[in-house]
Image (cartoon, rainbow, N blue to C red; front, side, top):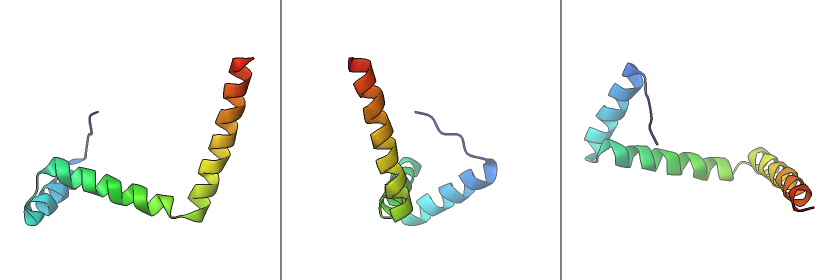
Length: 65
């Protein structure tokens, strides 16, 4: 996986990682974990996930016929 950041966002990320005494890659992982955790607690997001699950199950069922 690769990640491209704009110059400003990259500089901010570098500064935050340095201030926290961690590699940029660890800061990115922590940010992603935080984002996923926050999204998974949002009810509207959870409802959309349930809808996707139902849609995917229908497709899988059709493929098995």
